[in-house]
Length: 460
Image 1 (cartoon, rainbow, N blue to C red):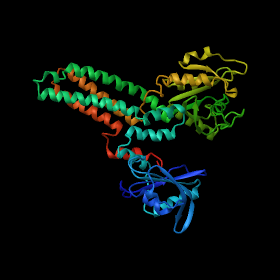
Image 2: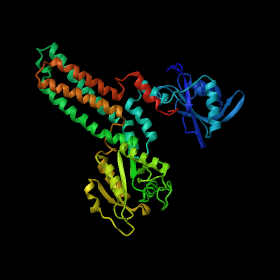
Image 3: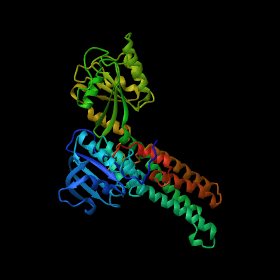
Image 4: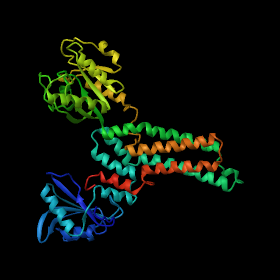
């Protein structure tokens, strides 16, 4: 890996690749404005270095005596910029050729190409945002539903950071008072006795548990629910997929075994992100290709977070249906009694013994999908947290830090129950303080920080 100097002036394309009205090349660092000035010929004749911060100038980008494109260039001086460094952004015409030509000129004029996420990493290292807010940036970009966007924006605004910092301050206060009580036992008013520590720790544990309880919601909003559609051939699995996607993505025919491969799609079901997998119909078959598809369907069912088992209500229950229903044992699953628009030969009562919620649907006519989304919301407790007012944990790494914090606080309570000396509380409280700092980035290893920002896109 090439040596990367964090004080270099960096540049990258900040807009999506492809045709568009505008393409933006972002430059950040000590020489950002100077590099932009080398290339920019303003119509007003006033160079960028003489421009005030947060102003926009019109002109042309010229390199090696040739005009590359017309452009608007913005200047944002430190510390009032995204990275807290001097930033210049060249707004040229969108499209691959124009934007890459401008970037190439910027790089040849003294900047280096930015690493993935390096602009946001600099914002973090320069103290403008903490790690929860930095991670929220990529979550806002990748948000697939309105709820996931709102949850990410809450973290970006610092709501989660405020909660974590308040808890760290509480723990730090306890540690300080314990130290005072040991060093100056004659000052009774400053002593924090074990009962006070116990009460404060119990309150902290409630707050930690609340964040842990909401962590799964945060993960689902961020990553989606891995959902597998199961059923024997011709029960309407592909029709259900098409209905959820609101497009003809899967081939629908009356010929059993049409779906032989695995179809994967992401869908927003009334605010719930689902990672849908439409599988081959599970049945006994001598067709080698179809048999491989059936085996993959079984394997995916084992790995799924949610099973949608489609049953044809216009036909009696078959042995194949029963075999598929057995796959729902110890899994979160919903039975979808499909084709309710046809003459019914199967009732909900016949499926009630499988321990799963049974819903009537017609995939062909988009009937019952709202009830399906309501049931998924209840099943994964997605209705218990209001993402418009409450901050939720967004990463598994943060959830792990909360569990470690919880364990140390519980250890401190056990120390009190065992009537150990007060100084025995300090190590556990100190570790709890450190683990909470991992979430905001105030106590985290450099390699973890590098890994987090490596998952960002270039230009952000």
